[in-house]
Each structure stands twice: as structure tokens, then as C-alpha cells.
Length: 556
Image (cartoon, helix red, strand yellow):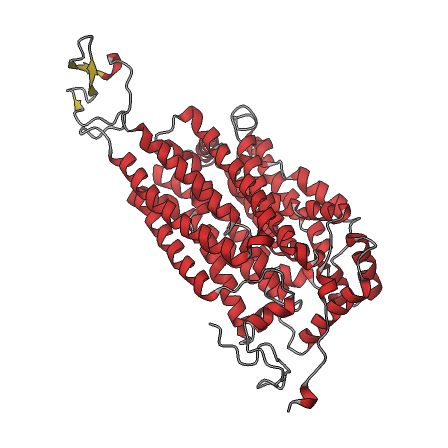
């Protein structure tokens, strides 16, 4: 008999029902401009890479009186691409201190745009000052903004959303990241802002979304959960709920559901960053979120976005079309993320993680073969002008390729006078593009948006800011490692680099199948119980803290 320890179950089903009002949708759009800036940062250096590297050489010579060496140039460019991740690591550590009672979710998003504007101005002015260092510093400052934004934006979205819309609204964070990637690819075209004269405006574009978000966000509601639980202002929380979800929302039930979560939270120690890392009660959830996020970054998707143009060139796509191929990939990424918004609350989180990751592993296996063949189908002479097994070098070192005369008999002719060369292996290059596109489709549906969503769903209010700090740090550190290491690996082992990503996807697929629970249509309390022993009796832990949901967790 557990008489004294039993308690009445409260039905919060009404609190899980909500509708997408115009104001809620507008709040989601404005908040997601922070995610847009993160996506823009990921890919903005891709298309104008040659113009920027030329500027780096000129700037280096202007300052030091000597040319950049090839190895120096590669290292400096790799650092420029990935340096925002270092700033992002420190930015992610600001999520917890800023988003609690100090600033809250809303004002954190407003204030961090000062970082965005500062970084944008530095990069915009770099050409006038002939200083490549200003680009590196500006990109580091942008990383500070991005690191904080990828923590606070999903947190705000999960807290303003009714549970039945939380999945779809949560995916918009990833959707706007993909839109940011696409916009940076379009703006980076030579016909737009990718020229020697206009690239400073490409790097300074952040000012527009940052200023717009800050100006509008000041007049939008704060997260009702933040107002009630962190700021202890029930009246403001009720007002925000009614403003966001309309007059049909049952305020009493919604407030009671948030208070119930808060009461359960108070039964545990307040989760600082260090407390979260030490806590055994939430360790399973933290390990799941960290490993899935690591899988997202080490799956190879950012390697494709960082260096997509060069990958297409290596695959044999003509240079004049490679930028458009990259934009096409970005457009597909956006489109399939929209599809994910529509299906995530129907198909569930786990299914949209498992099967797409399995297909991503298969895609990398094919890409290893196709790109490997493309790399090695060159002339016997070793040149890369054509892929013909009988090519030879003349005494001047020029490649002599076979051509076809009127009687279809092969004769040896100098390359400069040869008939138009038709590559018999061009279909392999286009097969590579097909599987890059299929890989992006699989990523955009599942592994792209879901890690951020499950992080918001698997932690209570008190632990959520610290959880987003850790997840954001993991995201950016892994992102930076890929940005630094991928070009080096690509130069050393070529297409076999993708075997590493394939292995990561296979391991991640196994982990998801065995360890990741389904969180669809569950309240925070339901999700917590998935990781612990479901027992009616609340037992104190070693510290005397009531902790029914997590008392004997052995999930991992």
C-alpha cells in the first residue's frame, strides 16, 4: 500500500491543444531570423572563395611584403571558414546566464544582435582597410552571436508553442538555417554580390536581419514559461499566453500545467551547467542529445555545404555551372525542411531520424565510389585535362590526346588542335550530384531539425538553458573540426574521406534504433518518464531530493 505517497493525476490534455495564430506565427518568424543568420554564416564564404582568397593574398602582401605560400593560404582559409565556431563555443556558454531571470529569452535575442552588427561592420570594412584580419575577427564575433542564437531560438520556440505544434514550430529553426544558407549562395553569385567590388556587401548583409529582428522583437511577447517560472510573474504569463494563442486558450489549465512542471523542477537541484553535467538523473537525456548532435555534425553535411562548389568542380561539373548546382542543393535543402515541418508531428521524431540517417550512409558509399572514379579516370600521363587511357606527353610536356578523323580512325593530335573532347565518364560526375542531392534530402527531413527539437523536449525548465549551452557548444566544436579537417583529408585521401562520414552515419543509425525514444505528442513530464523507472512512489535520492521520474535511471 502506498497510500501516503500517491497523488492525484492531473489531466493536462487541454493544455496540449493549441492553434497557430497569426501573432504566434509572426513571433516564430522574427525569432527565426537568428537562425537565418547562423545559416548565412555557414555558407557565405563558399561562392566568393576565389575572390576572397585573392584579397587575402593582396592584403598579406600589403602588410608583410611577401606572397602567401600555398600551404599558408590553405591553412588561413580553413581557419577563416571555421573560426566562427570558436566564437560560437563561447557564445553558447552565454545561453544559460542570459536567458534566465537576467534577460529572458526575448531580450537575449534582441541584445545579441549587437554582436551581429559589430561583426558585419568589421567584415564590410575589411576591403577599405586592406585587412583580411578584419574578416577573421568579424567572423569570430558573428560566431558569438550564432552560438547564443542556436541555443536561445529553439528554447523560445519550444516554450511559446502548444505541445501539439511544438514539433512543427521547432523545425522552423532548422528551416531558417537552410534559408540562410540558400540566400548566402544566391547572393554569392558573380551576377549578384560575389564580385571583387561587391563582396564586402555580401559579408555585411547581416546588418539587415539583425536590425529588423531587434526592432520588432522588442514589441513581441516573452515566453510564457519564462515569465511564470523564471521571472515568477503569473499575470504577465497569462497575458503572453492569451496574446500568442488567442482567446480560446484555457489559461487556467495552461498555467497549471506549467506550475506542475515547475513544482517537479523544484523537487530537484537547480540545474546549472556543472550541475547538469554531474546529475545522474538527466544523464541519459544529455547523452542522447549530445551524441545525436555530434552525429549531425560528423555526418558530413557541413563538409558538403562548406566546399560544395569545389566538390562539384572535382566531380567534373563545368565551372560556369558549379555555383548554380550549389544553389540547387540549397534550394532542395529548404524545400525538404518545409516537408519536415509538415510531417514531423505525424511521423514522429525517431522515424525521421532513423531512416534518413540510414539512407545518408548509403549515399556516402555511392559518393565514395563515384568521386573516387572521377578522381582517378585521368590520362596515363597524369594530367587532368581529359580522362583518356591513351594520353601521352610530348617533348614540351603538353598532353597529346586521340581525336577522330573523317574516317573514324584515331590519330594523334596536339590538344590545342584536337576536335572537341567528349568525356565518356561524364555520367559518373552527374551521378555524384544526384546522390549529393539525395543526401541533402535525407538530412533536411530528419537529422537537420530534430536534434534541436528533442533537446527542448527532453529537459525541464530548470535544466533546459544549461542543456542548450552544452548542445550548442557540441554543435559548434564539431562544426569547427569538420571545417578544419575536411579540406586536409580531402587533399590527402580524396573521395575516401566520405567513408569516415559513412561510418559515422552507420553508428548513429544503430544508436538511434537502440537508445533514442519517441517524443511525439508528449508533455515534458511524459518524456522525462521515458528515461526513468515509472513508479508511483516518489523516493528521495541520496541527497534527500524527491525525484520520482529519475530515481533509478538505467537507460544508458
